[in-house]
Image (cartoon, rainbow, N blue to C red; front, side, top):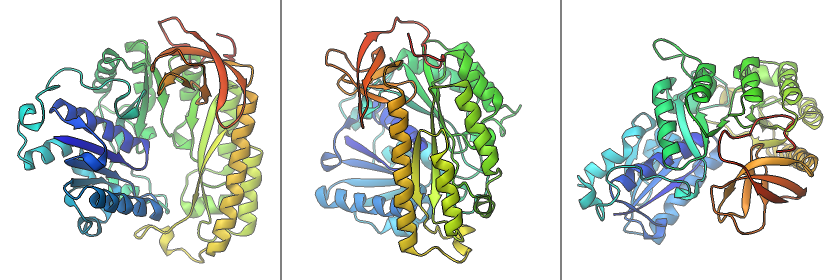
Length: 438
């Protein structure tokens, strides 16, 4: 059977979709484009109204271009609005989030597929069937936790993802060892509320426990830590990243807003000053770190003064990348009941202004890295490198995908240009500071 996996949204969805790819290949499936597939799995997002719309549009397009496709939809939109998704053309099955780990076995069983031979050519029924480059992924996104029990007023995800559930440390370590054997050199640790890792385990554990175990008991893998809520990015985590050499100097720390009245209305458990001290501390320890964030513009009751506070905060911050979201109501959230709403024209104007700030922060960081040397990993056809501090650098041809290199950054721009030398195999140098000469 020919299959295609279409993914929307967060790194957790990306990690889950990569596992679907592996499970389908293990059953002998052949990856093709959605237009040619017998089975299409759509892993949906519902963080914003536009995310819902994107899923609907993709499903309608697939059904139009490939009327014979059997479309299975999972993810947050499929969980939140099952009635709406079920009516879309070509959809034969909905898999809510609490069943998505069993998606492939459920769907192949319902389709009458009971062995690799019946599914396809009978290949890949055992052993390692995932490798760098599958689904376009050179680094492997590994979900170690799912679920969220925070109640931020703008967010629907706790109701679509459920309570926190963590994979035991031993299981994560074993998975990383397996991925290393399959050829992966970089693993991104993901979770819906990654900082809550281990609270549900018995005995309980912490994210720091997991990070230390991975650093001590696995070899030759560089780890990126996925999005961390500011209150979960502890000094001990920053210290481990700064000194171990096993973790990329890459943080994603969602701010959401910089005006304290708006943060309180969002039910975020920190102040703007707390966040400022956090990111300043990261920058002090890791001078070349990428520090990304999320912000929401036009939250209910956001005044023009609140907006100006956020704009000024961001302009003065050491952040290097921003995801900017115009606020949209999510039915069932606390924010949907808040009034007054910010007029649409004001939301668009403010969003455009913050995106201009985001562009400037990114440009400033890229410019600051010209002349430095960073370790990285080649992507695509080997002419693109992602550095440990999350810069994309174009290099001359002659490398394969998934090569470790050290890149001297020669010029800035939307994509940087550089030259390389090979990094000796062994423990990855990523994370060392100041780290400008390897």
